[in-house]
Length: 322
Image (tube, rainbow, N blue to C red):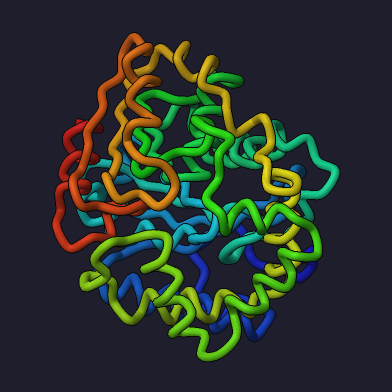
């Protein structure tokens, strides 16, 4: 498990504060990405009982309503940085790295109660920050976590799902079905990560996340590339893949539609027609059964629509939270 080394808490961190060389390289790449967007964001950590060290990015209006951004299964918190400029004038924004990605600890997900483990560290983080019910914006796996925070713990104010969220179907794309097979996932990840790390990151984003990658800066690819070398990450990600399913079939947690429809918080789905996980037709029936939900379809957008060249998704996030 990553995180045994000491990292200062309760203050903004610089790349030099990280003891491991790979962590320093990642923190430096993260800072360069923030500079690309001309952002004044802080890199901080808190120590949790559930998952060890949790790293998060934060910025914006200290007196604004809190907004929690939860990323997908293979993209770290820094992937949200392009969205920060649209929110930081009015809101206090927090983007944590899920354990196993970014600068958070890298625990094993094996033999865990997945439903509890996916949110317990977030509950500890919210308690440490003194936040009761933040506005929640979740993408993909972060959407599943957002649903669980609302259903099991009533810790959500407004709820927005940007990109197909987990929790609406047990049908996974072929690659993700294969990654649930122990042993095979090790070979697949090795094959996907051969060659130049930056080029691998570029191909991964275009394969899974976006239709048009022209707005993605080189600094983001460089961040994703150095993230591959973070201590404990490959083992943690493989353990998550097998915890999420077995031999191509997703964990039952990935189909909680009957529970999602009972969420009574203001909810919005923002869904690209070219989403690599599920088409909009998967999400619309869920929306129609909810009491305070709306559905926005984005023609020609992929799984992380705020990374596409146009700002349609960014505008929808800002308007929904307002």
